[in-house]
Image (cartoon, rainbow, N blue to C red):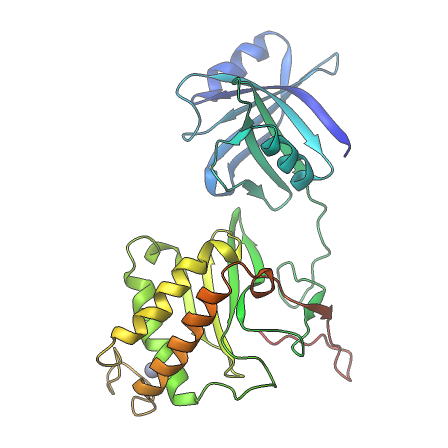
Length: 305
Ligand SMILES: [Zn+2]
């Protein structure tokens, strides 16, 4: 672990007067960042002629009273985060972090009340022209993948992160893929479930089947570990058992309304729900087996999504 920045930080619900006061004391603003991650944190960095630094951050989620912390940039966020947690520090954002395309941070409060704003600057991966986004240079080894819930990719749009999950229902190339009519019914029923769930409906961007018929893609706002959506998917697949009909299976609402099979959808859903429940503590259902990305004969990188 290496510390790369170390200076005081003032956390306030109203950063501007604080910044103005330090301007009168000879500090200049070097950096202002608005809307850091989902947390809507405004960050102001200041420096004076002698090289002293001060950070001021403003967050509606912060404490009512201003507080002082130490800003500590490190080269390995997760290592120090776990260290502080083990020492009894708590993250004021709960289990989530403030993220920008170039940094990850969390405000950690010690058991006795002082704060450490833990930050790591993330080196930007090279951008690939075809996508306009950050593309992992590794792909999934489909010969090793087991059914489960995986992060397929994360994309940052302005300061917002969206996550695409691979919800893998059958083991690729090893057991039969999902029957296409059952797949279609599962698409309708689970999309309806997700878009009506009070807690989750505003987080859901997309739910749809994979062309290979071995699973689904779920796109959610924000970034969560696969484990954090385990309960949601368990409930969604269990809900299929209660369906008396496939919602939207009419010529008006669906592009191929005869291509449905509710009993078979129930069979796949029950089997997958049982698998998710039985394997709730099995790390392998949350982490992809990686392999190097395939390159096609004419030199293009291969993407399956
Ligand atoms: Zn349809």
